[in-house]
Image (tube, rainbow, N blue to C red):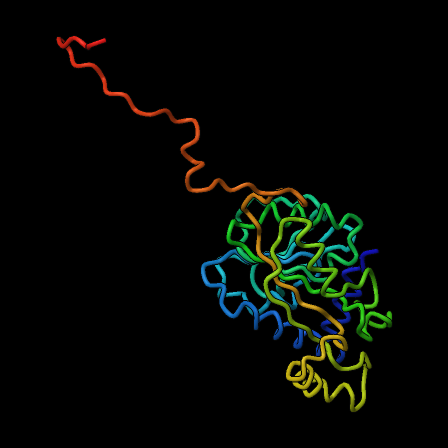
Length: 255
């Protein structure tokens, strides 16, 4: 079940908890991709808060919002860079996107396998994608007071298995939202402290969100369980006969 774009916008841009979550997630993603100069960067789901740092740096930025969620104009200043799309059929040419951010898109998608195939299609051969998903072991996935309490939460192992299944190579991972999902008080004001402690102590199991980076796999892979036969140094000459000299014109060969 997709969340409505109005509810997502209200959370990230109108509530203190959403503002703190926006900063924490943005810092985690930016840590993986500190520079996207001369790249095409796309987001799917509700990624406007995470795409903001790449405006003015990347060659092109576009926010793709699924029809089941709805779309909003973005950014508020300048030309609109958001588009309403079908979640498994994007109006994007194959192999042209260098970086993709997926947030509030995979866990609520009705056809996650088809979505991953579509992401693979539009990624450039050297492209990378980052998935921001609810952490199965985190507190945020157990409360519906935030967008991370909806859809299917994932563990790191589940994400990596899913990505390998769809021709992606898991590269790096991070986590965010270490503090409790409360909308006010001292715990919320201490959100930056929670994030710093969580990253330093690697409290991934307590984090509210997992951030998983993967690259597009473009080489052929043998079917699972099949054996790959590599010829030995002498086997490569199998089938060759001993060379025979060519007869010289005008000279008789002896029998």
